[in-house]
Amino acid sequence: MWKEETTSKNSSTSSAKSSKRGRNPFSSLFRTKISEVDFDLFLVFFLFLGIGLVQVYSTSFIFATERLNDGLFFFKKQAIFSLLSILCMFGFMNLPLRYLKKFGILLWIGATLSVLAVYIPGVGVRVGGALRWIQLPMGIRFEGSEYLKIFLPVALASMLVGPWKLFGKWSFVAKVSVLALPMIVLLKHPDFGSFVLLSAVIFSVLFAFGLAWKYIGAAFLVGLSSFLALIWFVPYRKARLMAFLDPWSDPNGSSFQVIQSMLGFYSGGITGKGLGQGQLKLFFLPEAHTDFTLSVFAEEFGYIGLVLIICLYAFVMVKGFRISLRVQDFYYRVVALGLTCMFSFQVFINMGVNMGLLPTKGLTLPFLSYGGSSLVAMGILFGLLLNISRFQQGRNIE
Image (cartoon, rainbow, N blue to C red; front, side):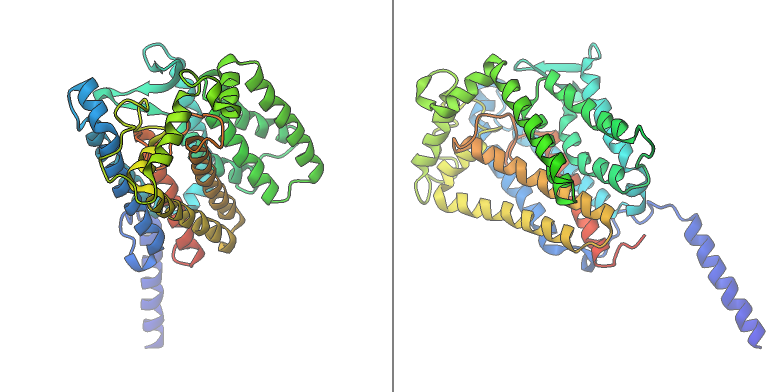
């Protein structure tokens, strides 16, 4: 009797193990229980999507009507990319983390290939003097640098502690080469804003996880001198720096956007002019639905609305840093910290530019600026943070 029970238990256990081994690792995709999700972060993601859609509609309707004879052109595209962002969020939230640790470096390599692909004839598209986009069917453009930003923390984690870390005397050279190649390409595009953002994240992660002070000092001196050289010896970057230091020196030229943006913050007052009532989007601020959307938001919703949106961004930052501090696995701690730094720096830089506190950079404001690649990248970022949060709580064990 005892033998029969033991045999049946062993057979059931072995069959369960074999079924577990034979199960498709992605069969549980989109089946996460709501109780397993960091609901606050999950809710803020959808709140941002909703606010972003309203903002894109408000800032782009007149521009799209005049230029494209379709006031809903940008809104419809943003709505489609919002759905793609939701799919990516769910996908990466349910991705088995062991696959991220094992194959994560391939995501960085794929993003690197995408920024190199713009040099293939007939593939890359030049807009406003910058060669950053890949032309896809149905008029959709793909910007690979947005995915470099998201997958950089994964690459750093893989090189520092993951199974793809390199050994031997060429280890340092190999790691630097893998990280430096796409960043050099970004300077060639040119995409100086993304280059600065990636550099800041690399430095922050290495600093947080124990980089020796002698290397920090050397990197700071080299980085600062290179940064100044890249600005001073490139005329349009130098003009932007001069416009930042003295915006009224060229009010109709390089300082025009900055001045109009600051006027938006001033004219909004405490409560704002109301949704849709802003004047900046009436071609006073060129393409107000992209990099300078925050100034339109401040004009229409005022100081109160600006403080509320800043609080939402701050909530995501605090949440991300808490996830990074609490997760025990060092690999996922690096990923969570890098993703949070990337999100934080991009928000700080865009807001600083809009308020005249930083020189002009071509970086979008997450969720509020129009841009499909950026929106999908944000879905991946939130999906990874939610996934690591589940792991930290013991609900997504490898």
